[in-house]
Image (tube, rainbow, N blue to C red; front, side, top):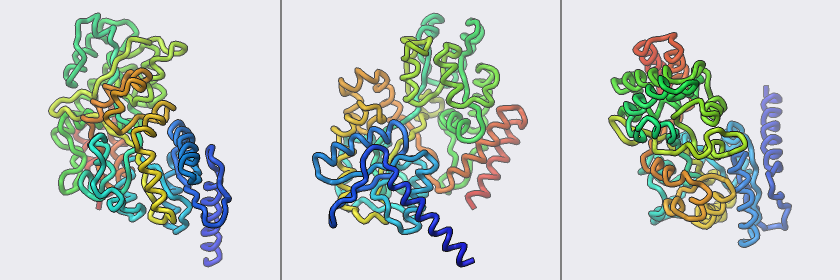
Length: 422
């Protein structure tokens, strides 16, 4: 048994060291004795690529060597956790999806950054973005800083709404009314599309409707409340939206939604800002110039968009905390956020940049995105969110597919979530 544990431990160490060397664009620094090299664990893709380029600028101007290690979503989280749990200290900074914050902060994986930001952050940062970086949510110590200001938006066809003399919807009742007209009157076009695939897709798609009706996944005592009256009303609306969607939406994920949107098959949906480039691409989209954006509609409440920021924090085991914090301050500065946004590395978390002429010229949706950020809601701040999401997503998909009625499905979901939280 001892031999087996030793082998497993050595395997973990080897994996961590291999990942450290697998930098995505910035060379690892062998360096002279005493030189500092900051190593960043980052999300692979456009965000990681932009961070890599910006890190090169930091290295040139500050003389601090920076290595950015890009990895897929699930691997990033697992690697960051293992690094601290094994006291490896391989990373000085780590990018975090905001739902990870409770798990990382309550698990004692991150350094408390309050001492480095004694006056808090300047008021140019969107309050909803900063709140994600504190645990307890919005009022506890800072364990990270807001780097990428992602949030869902409402996409709608301006040509179809104008054709039927409809104003852009502010409530889900208005969405349904417009969707019914378009589904009835427009051949081969549906008024809406839901993203019904089991698990994260349907939960992410349903939550803005749930929040709009005043739903709360967890109450003030951290007890599940998905089968509340608000939850029932939200699910009734969601089933109406499904009936106004193309056939087969029970299995739709992002790719199917993007296809339906760009090919002119639907009039309205919820989507992330990264999809704007797809609908505006004349080589693949049939709706160029016909799509506009809003904050997600409300109902009982007007705050309903799902916030999905990427944060950056300092692992507790970093050997270079002072230098890591210096890098964070540079990375979230107005100049660097603008630079990364122009490179396609994600939207800012500073309000002023959403009105920057260089950025609005490139990203026409920025005014709508800022409104969405300011009317956004965070996913429940619990270390068990991923498990809650899996269970809830299972029962939501069964309700959507007609395998369970609303009451039975939501009651079962609530019971299973309660078991998880215990």
